[in-house]
Image 1: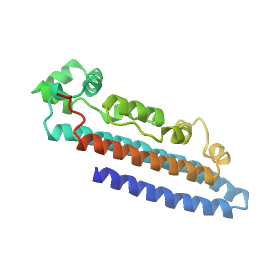
Image 2: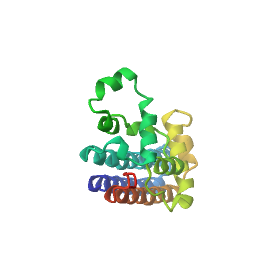
Image 3: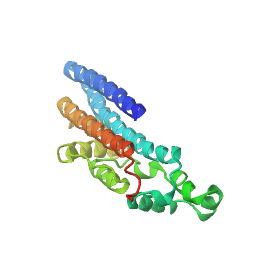
Length: 211
C-alpha cells in the first residue's frame, strides 16, 4: 500500500498547489477575459479532485487482487463477498476467452477475471465507494456522512464537464475557491480512510473465508 499512499499524497500535493494558484488568479482577476480564465480554472479543479478519488480507489482495490495473485489464493478459500464479485465479473468475458485464459480454474478465476475499471469508470462518489467496500468486504468509511455531499458534487461536475453538459465557464461561475478547498479536503480525507481500511483488510487477510 505504500505506493498507493504515495500516489495519493502526490496527487493531494498537486491539487493543493493548483487551488492556491486558482485562488490567486481569481482574486486578481479584474477584466472580463481575466475573470473568464479564473472561472475555467475553478471548474478544472473538479477534474483534478475527481481524478484523485478514482485513481486512489482503483489503485487501492488492485492491491487486494495483487495480494491474492501473489499468494495464489484459490477461489474456494475466499469470502462469499469476493466469490460473488468474481462470478459477476466472469459475465463480462466470453466463454471462449475464459476457456483460453484458465489453466487452473481454482486460481486463475481469482487473478484473470477481476477488472478494476469495471468498478470505477467516471461514477465514483461516496455511494460507489461504500458499495465497493461491501462487495469486497473491507470496512466502510466512518466519514461518509460528512464527505458524501462533497464527493457527489465533485463527481457530478466532473461528468458535466467530461460529457459536455456544461461549459467550464458555467461551472466556474457557480463555484467559489473556498468551495473547492472544502471539497478537496473532504475528498483527500475520505480517500486516506479508504486506503487505511483496505490496508487493514489485506494485512489481516480478511479476504479469506473463516474456518
